[in-house]
Image 1 (cartoon, rainbow, N blue to C red):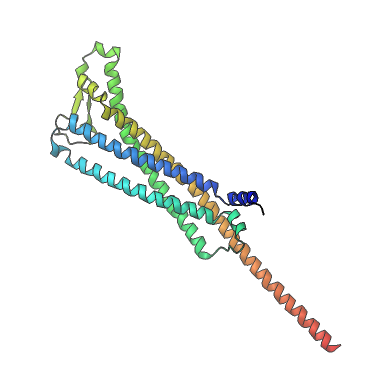
Image 2: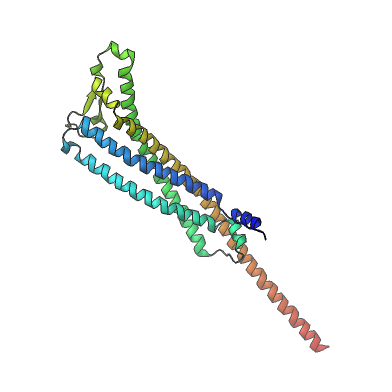
Length: 268
């Protein structure tokens, strides 16, 4: 076999579906974790500067955000390892790899591991649906604030009192009702929307939400692949069992035939 034929055969053993799902999963988790971490830091800066001047008013929120940032570190590390494991499982169950290794044989342990990955990926998919919905909340809040600022800048706003147009973040439960000032109105609100922290945090939350959605799609893709691989392993194990029984029957038939010939030769 030439070098070109070997390369073609090796490339045939690559689980491209698992590879695409792994790249999509890594990209989605990286976008969610990286952009979410920076956006949370910018959100704290906006609240401390414009909506809650007293540290004790937003101390609990700051602690929660720091905890969420630590959780982001754990999510990134876990999914980096989990994606590699699923990719390795894809290599294990690829039919081309089975052809390259003629001694490959499925076992009960292998089928149990594949079934465990199916169940775990299903649970993670449901959890990431919740993460995707949760990541849309800050996008909605920042969009409301951005649209309010756009209303202030519109020509129709000049017909009314601009200072009557306000955004009160206390109504969202982010900070307590006794926080000072708790809201921003008129030109002050417009200045907040023009800050780099607001602009960057708003767009980073959008990217983080898109990353969470990409991760959900990747997990659904993984779930379909793992289900197909589990069914393949089950069929392959049944085929191996059938072949073993067939070989035993053929050996028994050969033994009976040989004994019959020996008895016939001894009689003659």
